[in-house]
Each structure stands twice: as C-alpha cells, then as structure tokens.
Amino acid sequence: MQAKLIMCWNIRKETESEYFEFLVHEFIPGLNRLGIEDIQVWYTAYGDAQQKLASGVAPALEQMQRILQSEEWQRLVERLRDYVDGYSQKVVRATRGFQI
Image 1 (tube, one colour):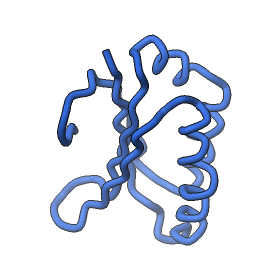
Image 2: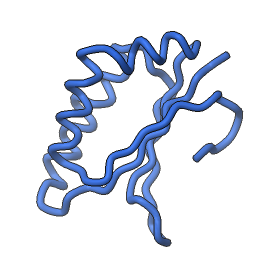
Image 3: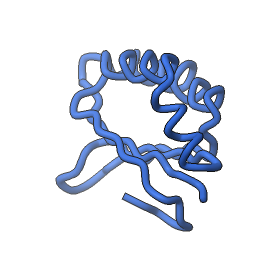
Image 4: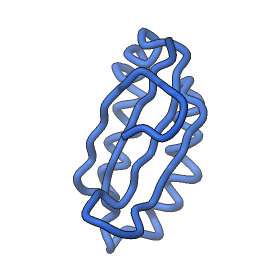
C-alpha cells in the first residue's frame, strides 16, 4: 500500500524569495533523495485555508515511517520552518486524485 505525506504551511512574507530558492533547490530534491516521489505543491488562491499544500508518495507505509524518523527529514523540516508558519503534516493511504 502506498503512503502519501500531506503537508500544509503559510509562507512568511519576509522570506518569500529565500523560501522559493529553498523549496526548488533543497526541499524537493531532499524529498526525492529520501524516497518520496510524485511531489505536488498546491497554492491556495482563494478561501480560508493554508497557503500551500504539498504531497508526496512512498511505496509503503513502513518506508514513509522510516523517512519521517530520519535525521535528514528532521533537517529538511527544520529548514522549511525557517521560512514558513503553521506547518503541519499527516500520512494517509494514497488513493487516486486530490487528497487533503
């Protein structure tokens, strides 16, 4: 069973340019190195929801759990938190289509 990691956050206005550099050059490649694939990042343009929703898939729940317990994952999230507020994450069984 594939596992999907779903993450949400708001970008701090004062760190927008640094955030985008980090996301493109470190965060997404870091997720790939850890074994998280099919990464998608969505922007909330309208409504009362967090600004960004991102997701990625691992082949199995056990693999996702190992990734989320790794030191590299902890470093990536700590760096992300330098640029965002309201970070949250959850793991769900991956299904087809959009999941929140």
